[in-house]
Length: 343
Ligand code: 5GP
Image: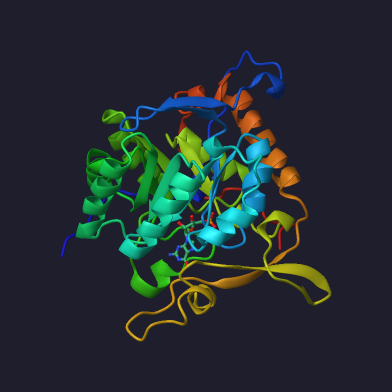
């Protein structure tokens, strides 16, 4: 047994220090980024915020709505060839969507047909524990099958594994184990890594090799999204912050007189019952099922997040999102905000 004594931080443990700025208005801030990916050699431009590949978030309607705002969607894994055929809106930009797969060969064979048929450009290889030995081998296989596609792989939380996945062929490594809003991994297993520190350390490791990272999970408010970018994230992935909208299609009901939508972790009982015919005896659920107040269309939520992010940039003097991390100094704090009127 060993203990690492260096303190690791979450978003809530820091604030961003304001700095002298010549920007007059948040209108002047450009949130678009252009990346050249290390392995696919492709260029990409857009606002680097992603909807998570979860039921209720990573849907075709969400992809269309977010694509119109230049944001990105990782579609949920469970969509079949038929679903892609009927539900993918022809106006959805292929630059702004990824198909999600696990490491199951049958699933991959189906995914290959979808990738070819619908001319997809992004593949998100997503497993809960990116530390399994076979994972990097699987990433290598997908890279050799698709030399020019953009490949996302995760999830991991440390520099060593970030580098291994990039060297195996991933362009973008997804970072986060346990921080999610409907995740119970830390409770069920005791495993995890404070998300801000994970992002800082993995971004540093990836950038050293010319790779990129996604800060996945743990953002509770626009300020957390800004902190993730400030910490060096190239993309930020959101589940809970984009849940509860019309486009997610979560099951609706009335709870205590309030219009709510169901939202659940992809390792929850609800997800396993829906997609895998129940929770296998050898495993336990690592996700929660919650009811989120209905939030209407996602556009207003996105504009609120982008407005917050532009404001962060003006507070620290960053004319573009690209410059945000260079302009960021975090200060450690004991209280993120004044919660006196917050339930
Ligand atoms: P959020 O933005 O809601 O805080 O986090 C979203 C992320 O939580 C997802 O992108 C995914 O990585 C993670 N996640 C989704 N469902 C589950 C689950 O059932 N269990 C765990 N451990 N993580 C989940």
